[in-house]
Length: 592
Image (tube, rainbow, N blue to C red):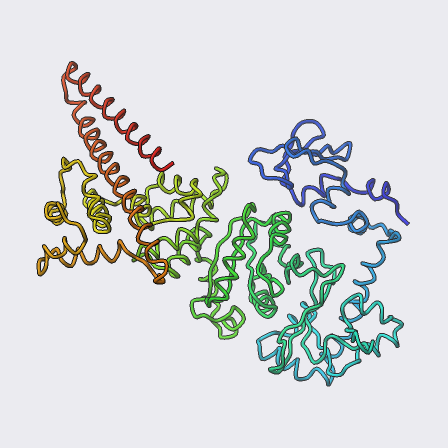
């Protein structure tokens, strides 16, 4: 039997590492590349071919060929040893404690032979007819090792007894179920089309079974075992990973039949999660395998949307690009191909939306941008993906940019809001309006009028020198002098064009929602306090905007002015800029 040193002597570490890392010369006997264990833009990972070791000067990971395979493939030393021994053509013996996993693989292989035999027999006629109706060829059925678990409670169990496979082994592999009360054991999979599930190394770790009728559950997987952890497995990855070396794209779909049918039609990057959305473990595995591009192809219904967004959440920080798409007809990929619409599927895969556009569009479709409440909900939904300020997180930066563009928000205002926990908890209409980049001074005047309609006594806070640009606001401000209540103001404009404007602003300013009689007084007090703060806020904003406009005007005059006049203009600009900063400080102190 081969030893560790014998396996090591037969292998060139550069050949093994080169399957995961693109290496280039870095001096005598050394190669370098981007580290597979952490993010980096400049290569700090090196391989010493003569010594047989690797080391990363960035994350400090290092070791020999065995530890490299352990880290990249997430394997125990025994499994890494066996994998490399097979590569070197050397036979090694499993050590104590490593045998249980091999037992499960062997028992699963025994069960697979049983299932495949029954698919081709009399018991599997209906199952085979179903597979052919779904468009699968005999070659595809063979390639994906599809089988059939016959009806009956103990078919596999009886076959195992004849072949010398124990009940304990079948139970450990999840192929039997034990009744906790009677202690009776019976086959887990009965009257189901069987899909063998292999991990990314091609090891047979479990099964998925589908019924042929309407009984429940429609799909049944192997339970969690030492080797079957569905949150870490992707069906078809053992085949799809072959294209990753050439920069191939992985396509994540929902079902086994989707994967098999897509592979049959040449879409060999298709994989499927096992009844779950993508997990962080999936993302880690795909990143380690060198995936560069990932497409999430789920249904267009609400469940499909949730699965897609959940999948996007799990791949945060991964190195690969992510797009999300769906078939326009609403069909799943297998049905689309069965109907002969291969071009429709190809178009869906070539278009789609990147993560930024998908997230923003999904939020817009759910909440709409026509109301303040819709915009508020969009921002709150996108907030978790906008909070990361790491300059290397291009998705977070992209979502922030798309939110500003879609909602008309000033980038600096969005960043200020993201940084303020208090604001994130209470994003009011005034805050939202203040973040808007397309908001004119007339819009701010209307916002100010809205707050004065909440409490007309706040009019006394204005100094009377403000030049109103909105004619309706100017009229109302003149009429509001001495008014005690909003109705006093409204009475002045009964039957006038301004009446509808005032009524609308009054409704927007008092969005009480569902307020009980017992706390209505508290609500009124809060509204009045909020309105007073808003008046200060808007008035300062109007003042700052006026000074900024004057600064812009003076800057335009500087190039054409005489040298002596330029000096005076520059001083005026400096004075105005100081005044703007002073107003900002006053505003910040008031908020604090």
